[in-house]
Image 1: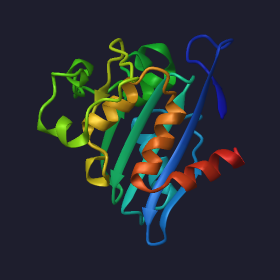
Image 2: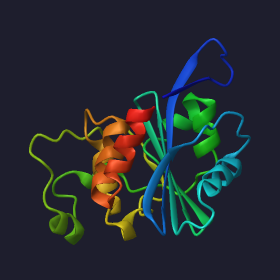
Image 3: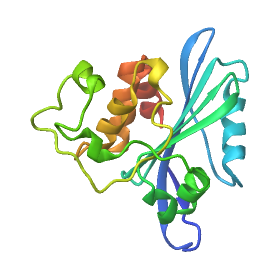
Image 4: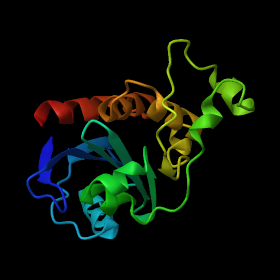
Length: 192
């Protein structure tokens, strides 16, 4: 876990973990990325590209303060797509503003996940867990479909983000299990 000063309040510190997960010729590989000094989201994307310039799919998971998750995706180094678990992250820290400041496309509404508000997709994925409590106060932003071709629908991603008690690390771990890089992320956390 990296600890970096917050933008304006240098006395305060923001914790983050930034894991790049790339799929190349050897399968999935994970490594930590240092975001210190990144001037904008394009520079963050360049750092992700540098992990494996030949990767078919490059994902970056940024977990901050046990509260926020940002996922970035590049396909063959191009077409940057971003999802944020909560728009508040952009207002709470320099890192959040850096990653989500230019994101305009809204994700689905969390209210769409409540029972009875679903459609055929919800039926296909099964009902919500009975003990699952949805946090309606979060405001996800960006492209919630960015993992759909990897086996995680927008509804699944939003449901994970909205489940009360799920930390960003829990969400990343669950996504890793669903997509197939769970062991790589687990090994990376053990090293860090």
